[in-house]
Amino acid sequence: MHDFINYLLFGWYPYVALTIMILGSIIRFDKGQYGWRSQSSQFLRRKQMMWGSNLFHLGILVLLFGHFVGLLTPIGVFDALGISHSFKQWMALSVGGIAGILGFIGCTLLLHRRLYYPRIRKSSSKGDILVLLFLWLQLLLGIATIFWTIDHMDGSAMVLFMGWAQGVVTFNPEAANLIIDAHLVYKLHIILGLTLLAITPFTRLVHVFSAPFAYVLRPGYQIVRSRRLARRTNTPPPSSAPSSVPSRES
Image (cartoon, rainbow, N blue to C red; front, side, top):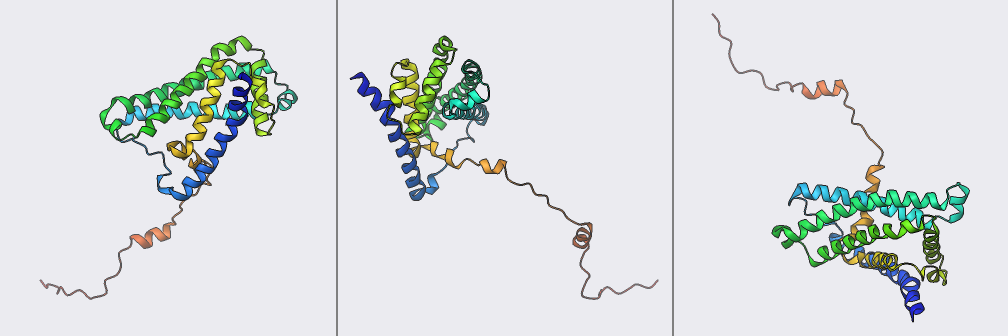
């Protein structure tokens, strides 16, 4: 029974969550483009919003990049670069730990303003609060994994999770067996992460697909105005009618 549940959660559920996220996002974009936004409440308690949002997004972006590179990069690439498993584990623990704490503080600020200020609470939907709660729990679980990761600084546990993630991507049916003996906190972290992917099309999380990354990489431009054009623009137009004021003779 334990093997069946493990295979169901870590062998099948990843594909279910990814399918719902992809198809649901396409359908939502096609049917409700006007709702494809983050629905910010920045004009209410702006200072707390800025602190919470900046800390949260900074932490989340670092964590997403670290998870993506750390889990999906083949082990042979790290071996070819001379990066040992223990060094990679130390980097993941230090950088990921700092990013996780920053993201957790930011998410706590955002959740606090949503729950404890009547005007913001009134303008928030149940989905908004549910997403923040899920993100808060996910960050908390991620930070909690640090205490068990310290016991595996040789990188052995990390290699198993890398094998599982890469096995899911390559449709390896035996991938779930690699983490069958992993600690419960890791499994809860993975399940909640997959659940966040599944609910993305139905919440404000969908705006992550339309983040303005191209704005940062856009080519620069400069408006040049010649002096001749400036003088021509500033010169008053000549009067078309002669002056009707008669001259006075002394």
